[in-house]
Length: 141
Image (tube, rainbow, N blue to C red; front, side, top):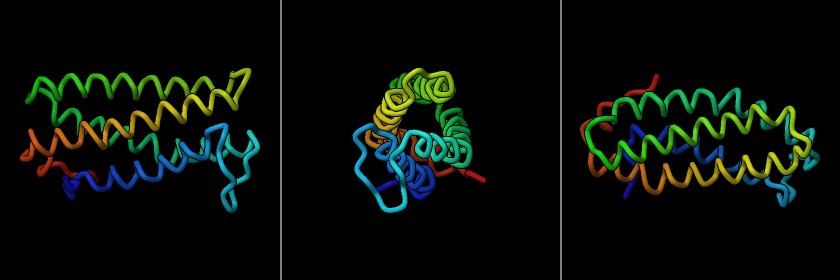
């Protein structure tokens, strides 16, 4: 199913975040201009979380709030996603004190990647199928 135009901005942000996930994994391949040492990865991750991830979660929280209460299965999925948002944010916050930042970034990347895939492949699809009027009314500023 094609993504509804109102969800496309979130999907574009997901694409950017999936690149970050690939980069943060401990087995990341070299990519032009992206050093693979832990301090460089950490600096890049902090920048991305501040500039993309925090506003992205705020947009999704708004979307989830609008979609809540209309379909029980979607409500269950939304509860899971909100819990995952909290867990991913906690992983990010814990990185500063991590004894093994490479492993911590890898775990964060893998968790974020699974979360994004669930949103794109399951939740957004269900929203479009079951709540088309609500999705059509969503506006992100």
